[in-house]
Length: 253
Image (cartoon, rainbow, N blue to C red; front, side, top):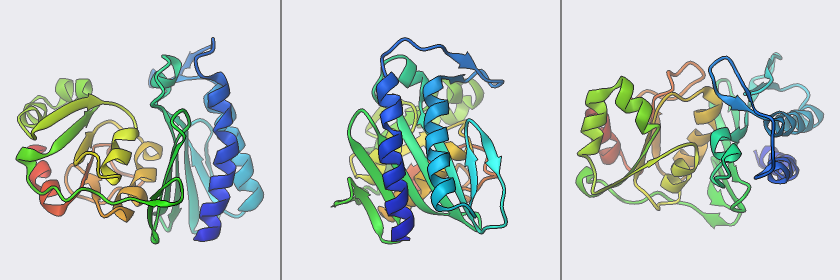
């Protein structure tokens, strides 16, 4: 596991220079079939990561947002989101991230979340969750939903498609913030906030978060409490404790 972690840290340390080079520069923006934007930075960054993985682990499968899947017979599969939060990236917001997961037999065993503009790297394996390799992370001890600090990602989509659940969330917690993308889940793992509710995610958006949140002592599932897999429906909730997680699932029914 340490070899996997050290290698992907080295690969992504170099790859993150690509979005940093393009950040807040004039870019041509294309839109994919689902209307999500993509730039040359997304494509070049994923290509750099894929090339590095192919060099070090040629027998492993790869699934990336921009270039799809390469299949092998290996039990190992790398998941890549080169720029999580392209809308943030193209609008000059520094809270875009880079997400990587390693799955074994479909289950996440390694997670990496880089915040290139913040100089922060979150990792999670069976050996624990860490910030910048040395600071061990642990979730908060919050168990009471009424006093919890909640982040709600994609609130506009939740309100439009799940009106009752959205209203339930708006009366939950002591403090609420609307947000987007991967960083709030890192804040859960680091113990700064207590929970994050998310919506309409793809596997490369949520699978890298699993090992990080769980290694920090938290819980991350779909809205029905099921483990996150490649087949999950993109509704995600991360929470610091089982009690807080259970209370949130009640609000999301």
